[in-house]
Image (spheres, chains in turn cyan, red):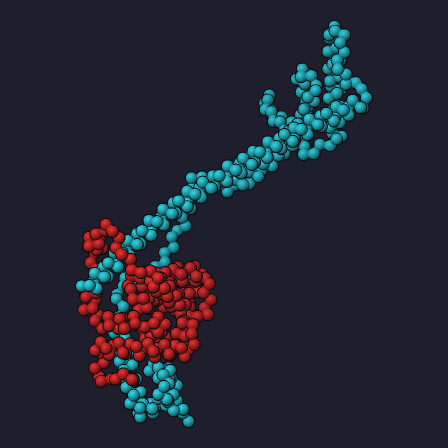
Length: 265
Length: 195
């Protein structure tokens, strides 16, 4: 048994109008329309509205949109851009500089050969200059860690060499003057070692300070340059945005004017 | 061989731009018609079509296929139309800038079809368009989706995010307003009377 259609059931009336209705509901509406002129009239007028709506066509438009994938373009080259390997190179350079500073490495190219000498192999600063020039320090391989034993051995070799040099000088000279004697006890040797260590430590501290200062300067320069570039980019974007907005407002004004003028005519 | 939307979507997800362009070719006219009828302006409707397919292209990899492609682009287009209508309500018509000769500028714009020409060509279209413009957005959109895009009540409910009964109510109320307006314009001389 079907439920009778009621005049106020507009949802079912719309469903009937568009044909989205079950057979049972369709039969109920059909039965009602035979007896209710108001509903039949309303349904007919809604059908006429639909007929008029079907006459509403949008204007022909030239569409033909296509998605075009542009070939990948190289990014716009900035006036300065650090290369990809720059961070690695910077890191390697810093590591080398720190290592060289700690080891006080000295590189000399002479007599067709290359000599790399660590700072600890330098003759002691307290030694006579002439002696140091005549007996250049022995070239040693660069080491990252020099033990006290190595240091003592080097100092002993230096002492032996100096002693022999001074003995030779004394023999040559008629003077009776006695050269500075390194002959002595282990106490003298310890003092000398301590002195050298102090000098090395002081040199290391000074070089570390200089390195830190230079690093800070590089970071500051880079940061300043970055800020300057950002300001320039923002200014350029602002100019472009301003021009675009003005153009859009201009076009809009023209369109509005044309619409109003057409409506007045 | 004509491929289905689902096949073209699958190829588009794999990066086949040509397949996506086939989808554009297939759906740009319906989307344009939808946008034009909802917002009532030709140029803006074209912009909506372009933006709709741009968004679809950008988001195609996230399209899970839980809905039909057409429903998906319809939803994008309707959202864009809604955004446009909101913007228009906020932005009043701008006055012409001072110092600009609009007549000269209009001449430079080339021939533009006047409203009169439009009315002469599409008299009934204009009456219908004016009547449709009277409707609230939701009623107008429901009628457009039903009348011109053949959607079911359920599809419209899904697109508009409302219950089925609400769609039917919107359709009935919208058609009733249209009937009154069209009768006032001299349409329906068959003797139908207002309820």
